[in-house]
Length: 372
Image 1 (cartoon, rainbow, N blue to C red):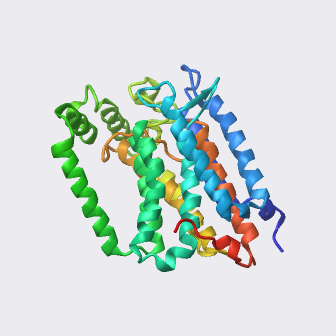
Image 2 (cartoon, one colour):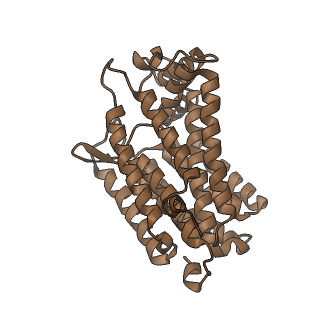
Image 3 (cartoon, one colour):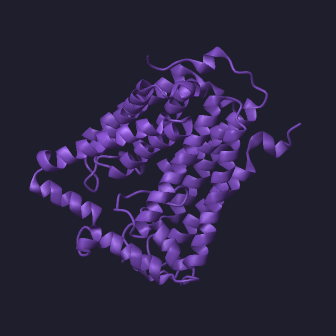
């Protein structure tokens, strides 16, 4: 018989996520030296925990139904289309603002595409050698990704691509088909570069790929992030003593560059411990996926793992100057409400599916087809 705590939450999932959230709040705190987003983030953490406990308590196996998956996808698609008519914020139309609360529909869309791909692949993984399934699943993903590119939001577009590619890889996609997709993408990019773009458009892309070439302009953020990470050295400057972040040389240090701000204050040792906490979370998700009662549960859990890992890889790579700046958050640490609620909601669904899936019998309704 399950223990009482087990009925409500999986502490091996919750505790690493909670620890990461508290570390983020500590890093973004200014300790009275100016405006801080930490108090507001504490409120968002409380809301996110309530969402986690609520979803882990109820039976979320209804998310396996085709009607639920397609409704979630449709709502995400409509919201992404509607946000394009909103007034741009910092050059992008990516947010709905409702008074003091802002919501980024791309966060909901990530959950929607994970559920849809999990549904699509839950039966078709045995037929994944058929190139048609690669095209159909890619079309679903592309429908959302294109709307995000139009915003424009290259960071989230990359995340959607990584989600699709990662879930196709775990489903057993043929390496031959992957190579074909890569060749098609390369040819399309080459044609666009040499024949479809104007000179000023190519200049913008070059600046995007190599921000270090213009450290006083497009590359300023990346340059300051590298300084912050490097100045942390082995043990860091100490909590609250990060000069790059607290003196605002590092822009958006509470959101897009919080990893760099953390590295400055905690140093190499702290970064190693931080990545170890993420590794614990990822290992637990992988274990849950292996023990899943149904194919859908396994693919959904792996999708959540791929989502978190993609964000960590992209955010850390940007802070280290290894990847172009895309303005991407890191799971649980970065300031912001919509992504934090989404992350804890995903863990809540995984917990519920794992708990209610024990001893479950697969039925035909769980394995309905999507598409032709």
